[in-house]
Image 1 (cartoon, rainbow over the protein chains, first blue to last red):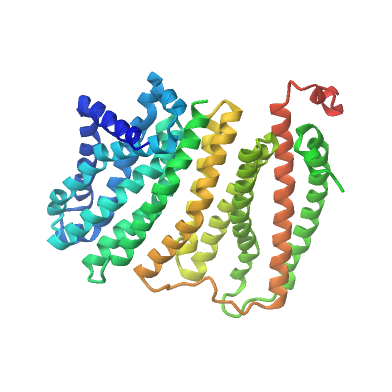
Image 2: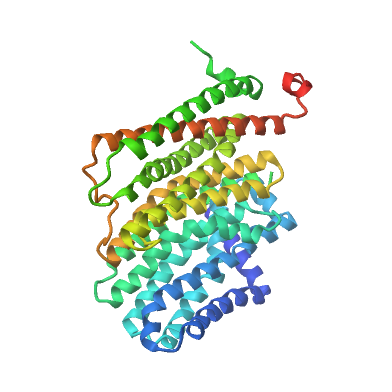
Length: 222
Length: 245
């Protein structure tokens, strides 16, 4: 079972490395969205420092949602998904592997790049570190929850817009606790409580989301 | 004892649904007439909020129904997924527009209530925000059902979405609540007339039952249409008096 999990992860990573532009698209989407806000709001650093946590988190939400379409679609088209459905290993393990690979490709780069963008918003060092931690805990939860939506809308016309309608309301708790932790830390309240809630959401979604995703995949690929 | 499994078949449920829907319509009309009369003429004017408070006789029942209908939908979706009964999924689908309308009414009347009371059409109160998110969840379910042509897939995909949503609703509600209280102390509270007089409470309960009866009636009429649409090739449909006519 663990063997299958590892195979799926390394296969998806290899495929992603062969098509690097897909990876970079998500990353640059995040960078562009974050850079657009100062242009719209104005360059005052005091304002920017105030809105930075929200901006970063909303941008991460949108970037993660945008990347969802590719999560199962290629496998669905070339028939690999059907083989996974037929595989003797539990489907939820394979789904978990796919989501992990997807997060490594689309989520982790955002986390690693966020300090650089944080400097653009003139955030102090401590806040940047908190933000990196919240993104590190929160973005996997986004990928896991989003996978349910991606599986439900697999192969539908207008799937991209539909996914956002399904998934964004479910992302709200992650957004609240993610941005809340950064804000609380920046204002000196301490973000440990928020961070614990974020961790709880991550654990719950690791447990439950793969099951729901595999149920949705079986329905969609029927 | 009545065999409830008999009514899991669309053919036997169709006439029963018609009967219940007719009765519920009458109950709804009756209760609405009584409830509206009481809310406008019998219930006293609130000493703090004036006449404007009367909007809660619409607002509160709508908000209750909006949450209740989502849970009922999730229940039918779960039944449909587990027992693979077609009718349960049809019920979930039939309830969705009514639930969305109730959520919309609750938001709309809430805005009307908020303007004179709080001085703003909208505040980011925990209840308002979670009601708005509930509205998004309804819209997502309806959009997903609409996007899938194959009814079997639409039913089951919608069911998974509803069950995921129902697990999420408490999480969303509490996260919004904590978010709100952490931002600022609640400057407004819906409960500022918590010692509600008996007549107001009675009126509100009558209105709630009226909304309930209305939801049952509309959902059953809608499920009858869905049954006819999906079973249009079945023999029993072509033998119905209203079809043959």
